Image (cartoon, rainbow, N blue to C red; front, side, top):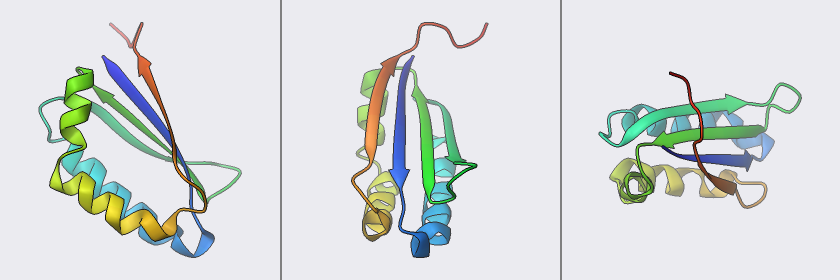
Length: 98
């Protein structure tokens, strides 16, 4: 499994629109055959900080995700919301349950 965790710092005035756009992207991503999981998390101590946790069957499935219309729309919709560039860290899963 291939996992990507993305930390996003959002300008406070964009928090609600960022959530809306991210939930829309997550719902569509979950319908991709290569997606295993997509979580949208909001920091407890800072409501303008988010973590997007994405799991795919393979690195190639993640690359395919980045070409989908819903991802490209999300990227455009949230571009002005970023307080700083998002930080993505890619992982190879060693254990994820059963």
